[in-house]
Image 1 (cartoon, rainbow, N blue to C red):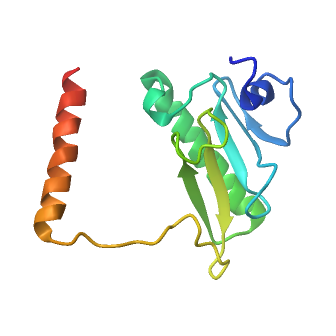
Image 2: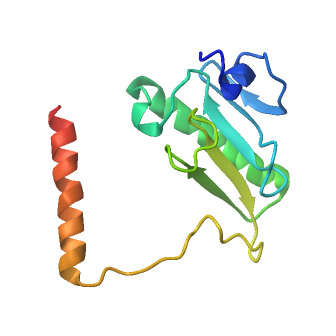
Length: 143
């Protein structure tokens, strides 16, 4: 736990929140500034800043909890779908890993999470980009 982190304070009960789910490794609660009613955050109880730091032994359980809470938000809010999002460092308002679970409906106007999209200028540029990432995957696996 990080004693200054607002999400750590929520996880250990020192800060109030509208909790919708909790188990030994995670807690889910309503976002205080929701995009839509039902906007929920799922966090690990352990202070982890980014998904890249997430301990392997908790990943399966954490994502099963994400599946459960996402289904519960969809059912509870009577929405047509769910949008899940994780920011890592950039645009991460609280430096504690959290997954946004947003209820979605066709025509709800949400576009700001999808950014302007573009294309690679050439097929060679796409090939070179894919190769950079493949090489990084190999290097990371070899560590």
